[in-house]
Structures are given as C-alpha cells and as structure tokens.
Image 1 (tube, rainbow, N blue to C red):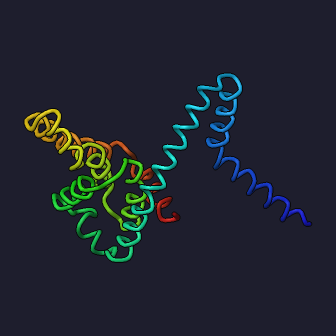
Image 2 (image 1 turned 60 degrees about the vertical axis):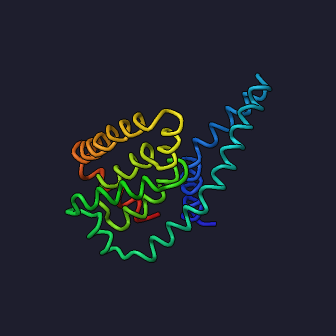
Length: 189
C-alpha cells in the first residue's frame, strides 16, 4: 500500500469521525447513563426509540414530496414564483407551503434544501420555517377547539407579521457570503 492510499484512508476516517462525533458522544453518554442510573437510561432509550420511529413515519412521505417537487417544478418557475424579486407572491407561497405542511419542523429542512437548489429567496425559506412552526392548519384547528376562535385568530394575526419581520431581519443580518455558502452546501446534497 502506498503512502497516498494510506493518507486517503486516514483522511476519510477523520472525516467520518468528525461527521458522527455528536452521535458517538450521545451513545457514550447513554451508555454511562445505563451504567450509573439504569432506570433513566431505559427512559432515555425509550424516548430515542419513539423519536426514531416517528422520524421513520414522517420522513418517507416528505422525501416523496421533495422528489416530486424537484422533478415537476422547473427551477425557472421557482425563481419566478419565490426567488429574488418575487415580492408578495413569494411570501404568500412560502406561508402556504408552511401552513399546509404536515409533520414536525425537522421535516421542513429537506424541503428547504430543494428550495435552495431552485434558488428560492433566503427570506422566503425563513418564512417557510416560521409558518411551518407556527401557522399550521392542524395546530390552528386544535387551538380553536381548545382555546377559542378569538385566541387562535389573534395569535395567527400576530404571528404572520412577526414571521415576515424575522425572515427579513435574518436576510439583513446574515451575511451574503454565509447565505451563499449555505446555498452551495445545499447544491452538494
């Protein structure tokens, strides 16, 4: 084996270790929890298993939607509808995507990656995240039934402008080169 091959293997091992460092640390901490507080370790393992099962139920439909979105909607159409210069149309579409979405917030990240590949405006992606987390229809219906119609609509009326404000502030405060780096990273996925 020559020196280049050996260096490549070391580099790949370092890269893999760095990539899975959080998982390794979590597994070690869970192991320590089992050793020192077995009951707490069992509870933690149950939570992990439940979360993993939930992810397995949520992510496949999301990936199917992403695949269809990626294939059916041309990049030019997404740029026109939600890209730079899309204005209010892009904002409304970002809210619509986030509001009708199903699943937890982490399911929005793969969709955001596809949006980045299609050059959707950064603030519209931030609006998508805000809408996904705060204005989903099932959540609104639940609020109406438990907290009342007036409360649910008032919270929604407050959330919408705040989400837009936060999205645009992020567009201002996150440096252009950082946004470009995020988009370049999305292109590689």
